[in-house]
Image (tube, rainbow, N blue to C red; front, side, top):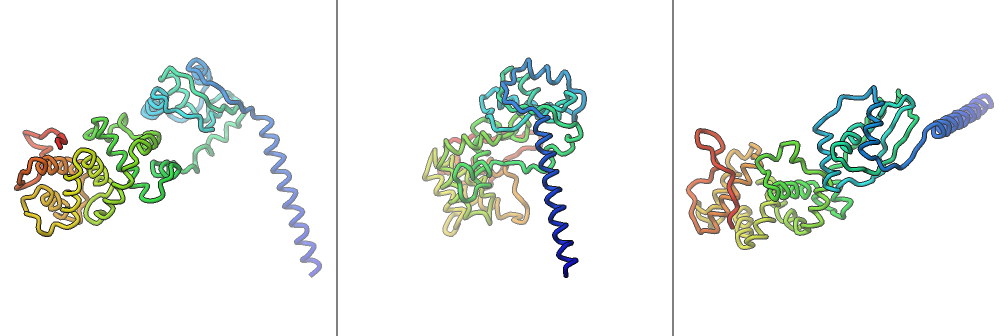
Length: 298
């Protein structure tokens, strides 16, 4: 028993010594590295990049994305660092530096110099990317954050007139866009809560976007759409929203295209606003005479 006790004591001593050596190494590294908050001008960014010999391939698309944030004054000082090795190579931050140059505007950032070059493989390898739902959580949203973020994305695409080109890199919705849209459109909360009742029938996020904009233009049409989708009993088969519901129930096992859903909903709302009967609801996007994307006219 005495031998085991001594062994345990030795293990504790060795562990404490290892911890102390680790702390000493960290202090030494912190002393060697230099950390400073800087106003990074395009000229200074170019100087850093001119000395950059080793880095991963540059993504022009990512540079354009960051530059657009800087140009639109959506860049925020958030504590992220630009890391420069003791050999002068930019280990982390080359895209931000190129974006600063492209935007032709200075940015405030933290620059850490004196990093060992072999640390490159550890940078950004374990980071969990934040999405629109995370932004809404910080904004106080407690439920349906993912659906709310997606609904706001569709709202922004519609407002910007890029629905049919929403997949293009330049039309990407950023977290800062979601944050601003949430502040400007608090009614999206009620829209999502209402349309979550349809999640077994249709995409709740797309329907929340539709219900929200319909309500803003014609609350009666918006309520009529929801009532018909929730319970079509007593509604004629040529009612525009009955036909919209038929679209959702046809091949119900197959996921419906979001853009097609929006186009058909616009058509149904326009017909309902004009008290028109609809024999069929369709949007022809292929063939010899494809249709333009419908314009909401309610």
